[in-house]
Figure 1 (cartoon, rainbow, N blue to C red):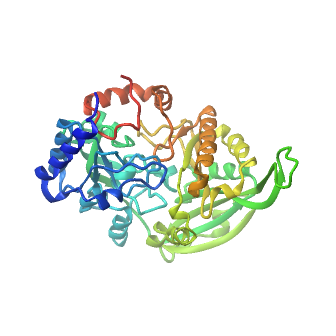
Figure 2 (figure 1 turned 120 degrees about the horizontal axis):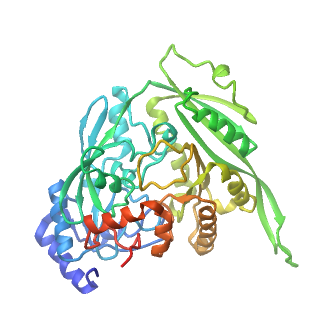
Figure 3 (figure 1 turned 90 degrees about the vertical axis):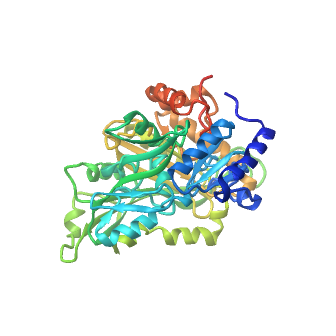
Length: 478
């Protein structure tokens, strides 16, 4: 189908406010605040920002948009990086208006899609509870990360945040309110989790909680060899090991100056900065006072290049440990740059060759102030979310280039990131879809989803037959 023309959009947008009143915002300055996302690569000014109060409001809104062929996209805090949470001339469903924590038990919390993970953590940690998987950045919403997967330092034990969703209330592209879970309407449940709002908008989530201890000890290990880190990470992730609660890693450049890489004859030509790469590995153990772990014992079978010591956190401090980093990003200007993050999940057995090959020619200054290279060792059998694509096998390795790019260098950076992305796919990797994605053909999307592609196409036709939900990101067959 064809969405409405710009003129028809304008008339339908004006009708929105007349129909629904004050929770439809048409003010240009407000709409401009939603013109881009965290990536700052794509800009689109929506025609309206909707702040519905409940699922019935969302259903009424979707039915209106369907009737008038208006695109609509769900948006939490807009942490996507290729405009996945923006729309040109359409409607942004701003989930911040549905940010209530409805219920908390010892096993789960029921929340609105706009609840920020930090607020949920602050609510449940004093009760001795914590969400099993948390992203490093808690300034994102439960609905947002559930719709893209949601990866964290405990995923190797507990899967994605989508795996920890027990039940979802959603509004499909036909305006129907549906409750779905592993036991009820499973086909819809399986495409909404990690479905990027392509099939339905999440309006309520029952998400798993686990009991936790009050203290966290963190071990700071550094490796000078990626293979050695992977060997130790495999030990840590072995279910028989069972000592550590989280595992966090990345690739850290040790700047070495510039070297000649070309045949330039003039001063500075053919020169590029380079680095020796180190690989931090951070591990944690939860405990109660009086149960302090024996450090030598728990680290006995690991072989780091250097043990940098430990630090102690309360449970809440650990969950929100990245705040000082984000403050540095703000002060350095990194937060205001473009963030075309290229994240991929690689087969374990080729990860070392791919990563070392890319890093060998990667100039460290391309990361910008605050940018980093992500390492995410994980088990390959912890997720049952079909649309979270990964290579499978016992172990997988997530890896990503997470730069902050000044806008004058953005085109060059995007070209380099596209090359790294294509190479990762050639190596059997799968892109993480909240990031910088340039799949512009049906064939590329079919390759990404592989055997799940028929499920994706069938679900789009069934649950969003008029194609109003987040159009233009995934390319479907005619």
